[in-house]
Image (spheres, rainbow, N blue to C red):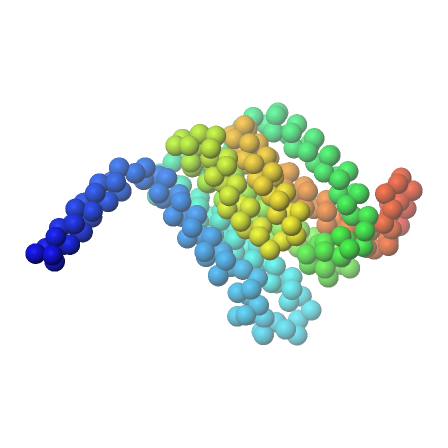
Length: 267
């Protein structure tokens, strides 16, 4: 009798659960599960750590091994975060790519906000980079500071990565959840964005909260993720360029004299 009650209870709960699942928004389910699967692929299969463990021994005598490691990561995430999500939108969700931010949208406000943001950040970066400790961390591929060709290749790979990174959160996830959650999708996409900054310097991780929200609002307002790529990549390349120039000139001043000195030394 007890066994029959247990089985009956399990059956009833299973039917209720099945009814709940059938009533859920399939698009939302697909997006959440896709993000979880693709982020797992990124973490375990397209990461620098995966390259280091599985491929590093084959290139350890090659001076460009660390560049290859970064390019593997950049291209790998471009495939998983960008190309595969495009296929999901087109063939699984069967929706327009433009509905996920792949359009210029309100380009006037998008460009205006991006340029203002970059101008403010450029000033901030100039002052933040006035210490050797800060400069010693950028670019992340430190060897690129001594070779402009390597620097250009690294930044080109970074650009691919920024496209994929921004599209995953400010394109696929934000616009995919927009219909169901409205402006709450800005906060939803911010959460994994911040979590993936864990392990980085504390100010950068706290900054990711404001940054994730700000970029989400920018994408939501303009109906495009392009301007998020522009601002995010603009900040990263500004940091890398300024830090590289300071490293090469050994000038950590913040006045106009340092600006002119760096320009004169380079040219």
